[in-house]
Length: 260
Image 1: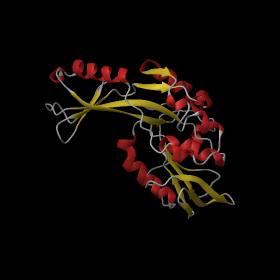
Image 2: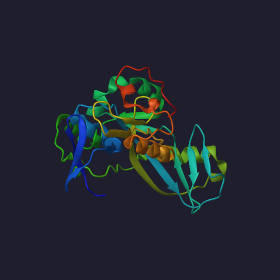
Image 3: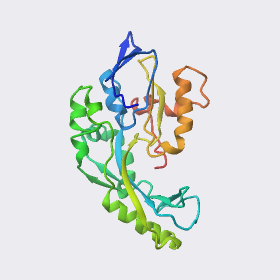
Image 4: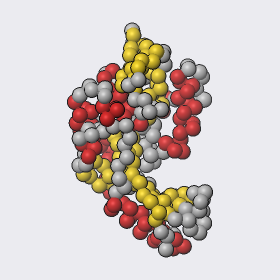
């Protein structure tokens, strides 16, 4: 915790260790679960992981009446908290910031982007010059970049905050006077087919990748973590890991875009 990994050390195509800001850790196995940073972290090894960061926003209401614990509609989603408030959002509604990495993988992501076009806004923001999708991340191999961008914490999108509140009030008349306590933003790391990658990495023995949850990580996290742990220690997987393999994104396999 609080220690940036800088690079992986290989010997004869196998994991030998990890270089960190606090020294070298010798190991024969590594789980890369670096979220939006995963693609950039693996790139110096010659590993291609098509990944895009989508900027989304969620809100928290003040405590209010209970109309359901978790309700999802095409217009908004609400999830009740222990204190009687709700987490509010619109699934799939987001900002697609044009970045060097997004341009690099535009061909792989084009089918998904076209499908989501009515739900996203295009723009250029701070992520073009800093962070995992930035020009610096794409063009340099500086392994200190992870220490300069420890936390990705973008502000909430003002236009989306207003849309969420309006949609909740229209969809649930009982919440017509709902008040907002706070709002926050974040980057969701996506794959071209919106299916996570939980996979041993071809060509690097001992390396497992778990990333690209595409907005479903909170719900899928326990299962993905269990599968990733099995792959790390070479146990028999609890489920068939084939649909989650990294190679499907780079070998020309036909991709079916999952629910977003």
